[in-house]
Image (cartoon, rainbow, N blue to C red; front, side, top):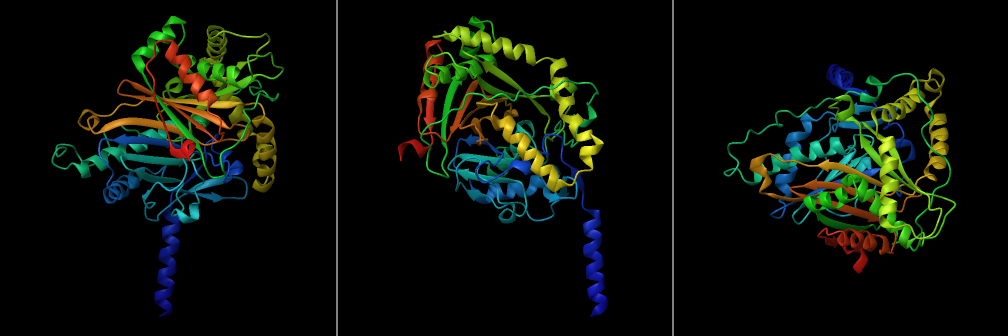
Length: 437
């Protein structure tokens, strides 16, 4: 009996020793420190299919692909000096019908200690990810493979020629591309002065308002080309213009409206990592006179983004962030003290941002699967001082701009889409049920 007990303990010890572990990437180090039930750092990427979801098949699809994605098969652990990842050997999270607002807090103890969840509602599949795991690029890679596997199970005859494995050409690289591409020499990159805040009556606790706008990409190209700017610059500018019209009341202001715009760094460094790899730039609009025109706001925003989204500046931002992680004095500070300091620093820096607009780009699916997929969406959770955000992605010629907000007021959303429609862009809008309760 004692011998059996010793053998079992030895086996458990051996399994534990064989578990993979990993450091958090440079960006991920912040998220466990600041995460709360109200500020979850969880984003959602959704896909709408042509037919209602079969929960059993979706669970089976998740069970099959998860073993191939080590980045998603991790649990968060707390060390003496840093948080770290440890391989999670528990069964995949249980797929459930949607039961909470987008980006709700992930209680890891009720989720088999995984840092992502998969839910569904009618024809829609939702992947929700704690940002410490990966960014939108990593999330969309995982969601696409989940959709492929689900469709193979759902339509075995129609897709019988498709192989039941991860797509060829998908990189499962888990390198820390921040550290790999770090170069010494940088200047301070973040502003600390207060920015304009979108305030007002809030939705009941635990609710979030979501508004999707569907915009044809070719019409957006024509509209943005008219001003000599990119689609992304156009949309960020339209967001800021709507806030200027509805909340700043077209008046001069002593504080700017500063919109955070995350930039995917992979194309700049030929990286294929599944972990976080992005930098933050900021579109800043400070109205010094009354009644700026839409074009004036667009040109100011576009110029600001052009000056920041350069290889040199992005490298400077990345190097500044990584330099703090590499500081040997900071590395030796116990985690409990690091957490306290990082919360204070984050609290001060959060006041310098009004909102966030992120664009995860154009999503492409392989030909046999496209006929079963209608739309993709990206929905962001709220951050300290940010009560409204925008998420952008496009698929099959349609760009979806998704507003997420905890404010009752819809004037910014309405102004945004009205402004774009005046530029000759067709707009179709839908929202979740929060605004109709």
